[in-house]
Length: 150
Image 1: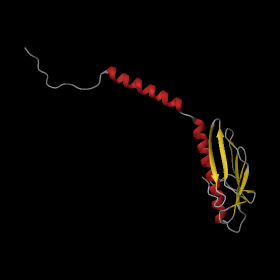
Image 2: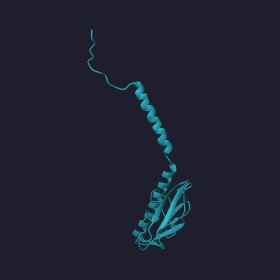
Image 3: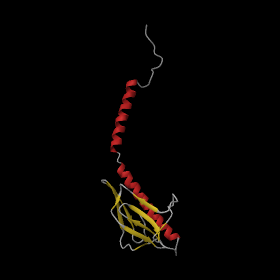
Image 4: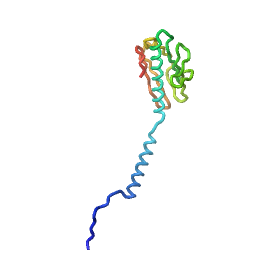
């Protein structure tokens, strides 16, 4: 007597599912080992510095006639002031718009003062600032004519 099969059942076996899980785990371990936190820290710090430069430039343009805003950059961070006087941090409301990094270094010490048109005073050439952490680095350029930071 011949057996009849109505439909063939389809699906994955337990061995196939376990192999997929093992391969996924191995690929995840490989991807995590390639992850470098230093790169992300430096890129985030350079983005923060660009925003602080743009903030000082924007505030100088909106407060024409008053003391110009400036940003003082040193080897470990920056400070934004108005005519040398501390200002309120735009996000936290704390007195003093200052950032100091303990693990990121800047290769440039400079003070950029913006006039009422947003132009940097005293820059005769574009200013390049390099931020670094370990072997990772990122550079910011402030244009000498327009003050545009990128």
